Length: 447
Image 1: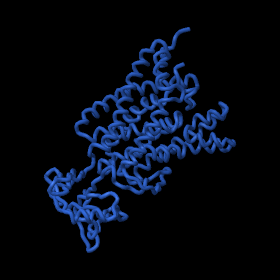
Image 2: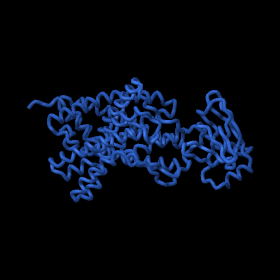
Image 3: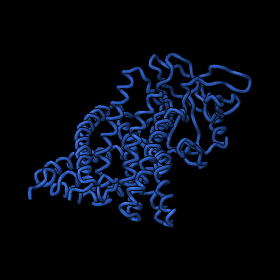
């Protein structure tokens, strides 16, 4: 019998692709560890204000960046800040402690040391704040009771900065989970969750990472798709560059895609870390996983219905005949399209700062995320989203790493080309064999 071109004759191709994916995986783990370093050891905020104990007293070393240039600013400790319905920030002039003034330079930077006398220190230490905050504020309108802050006023964010709620999604519905935490605690929790997800993805669903790599040498490149982590690494660059191409075409046609509003780098970094978790639950588990749950609940499969929220295809395939699975797959296709459309619309409706052009590129990304969620389960979808949001952004937080970030971006373009070829050949082979059923047990695998 003649050997297939994608098995024995291309075993070296499979091995080469496996090595290329491992390089990308090492880069992702590097960015993963780099995140912890940024949060805990390297100042990333627009305002950094450590205290230094000297023989002459306590010195507050204020360094602020990216403010309006050549403007006077006030350094204010522990002010009470309120926000109106329009998102404007106001400061209570009777709250907190004014340390002094500083003027930004032509680049919008302000660097100055302030000596805090013992009377101010005593008041600060007894003001009831668990974590003391330092604000660099500009005042644009004042009343007797409130001062309206300029849009570039910034808080000194650190790992100890307290927050009291996390915004979650149920498609286009948002709600706040009231929970007290500081940024450092939140990042450690998120970091641990991602570490667990990485381990899960590398363990299956058909072969573990090492077994899939070995199989790619003996059985061909499609064996790489037997592992969730490797499958994610193949899909991630494809989704990234397809959405980039769509955005460039829209911009060339005069359609605005918008952008995220300026934000403190540390807050933005934590946001990029939490976004994949809450958005995959909000836009993939709901509605795709819920559709799978309803299908299984209707057949009395309560336990498997709940587990389908984690990995829909596995538990639908387990409980369905081949004919029933294909019939129910139509509902899954509809849910995938609906989830992608809602995901695109949410980028504009929920006030993130994106323009109407973002709807299409986000919806296309939503198709990739939804497909990966259905085939591999929730860990793969979260890690794909994390790769797009976090991995490609972490190197921008330090100018000395920008060249490394550029190199990785170019490298993902190479993987995107290879991944596109693999996915196209996979679809062609699946249609020929009539096995395009969105199930890793029948779709993927080189054996």
